[in-house]
Image 1 (cartoon, rainbow, N blue to C red):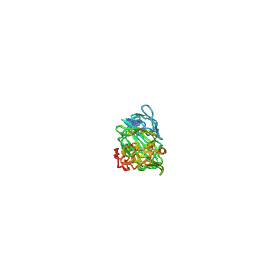
Image 2: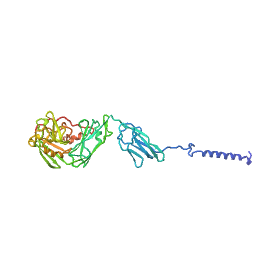
Image 3: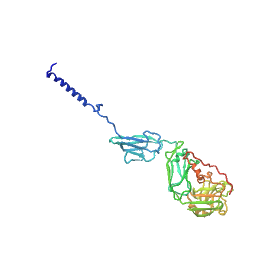
Length: 410
């Protein structure tokens, strides 16, 4: 082999070229040994979540409805029904959530629209829809005491449904009574009367001046049998003064006791008692309504007789009212068909003082007031029995409406 310098120069040149090629190849990589293409776009970061879920069906219209955004905020949003009417709602202060503030309709479809913007400033559409359940029937209900009404110390709260309720326990959970001062009381279910009905009464008479708030969250509530509640109900009322009518039949007199003091002591006449239909029922009655003029009938004995200053105390036809025809017997004997008769002057004096819910305590007759006498016999039921008529524990007792046989005369 020749040792001449000229022979080795080409080898050095080739090595240099090879190093350049390697360097160029290394310069085309991504530094991580991966693909050599352009980095891919990961997309907007904002994430939209719907409650109820998108495309949900048979949603309860009273359930919470909202949309929330993670890693971003809501720019604009609306929930509209099939007619394009927007549902009322409110946006949270941080604009990360929006919720409706009114109940939805039964059997309707709702559509979300709007835009959210992520922390990366990229927009994300708010798009979705859902539909609500369609009941077989919706059942209205009514409360017996109106807002701002003043009532007597024996007034029960009555919730009357227009159809039968099967899910009584669930309904009872949706009911609340709030009082000031606190008052012990309970709900009790009564036999259906053109629909189910549930009463709330205190354990003892209301304290005068008690403020009462009643809430019935019935809209969207499954009543059973394909029926759902028609609407929520509320009422706020107040207990008035204490006024108790003391009505002892053997005495032929009636006292009106207000706030512990006797304000009236009237000569009266009670039911003759010669047969069951003529017996004024003993027990705690409740004033339910009153009329300055009232046409009374008791076929076949009389029909459409005009009576004045009539205060109803039970649903079996018992009233406290004026009756000039029994005037000579008032204070000395009982001759009526079961009502409590007063003179026209005394009846007129008592009439304006009577409130819905005033107790009328009748004593000394042969037949007790019972379920057979109408819808307000609440106070004839002892407290232990009353509590068993609640559906809260899933087993509701029902008081029988079987007429009570007459007891021996006293």
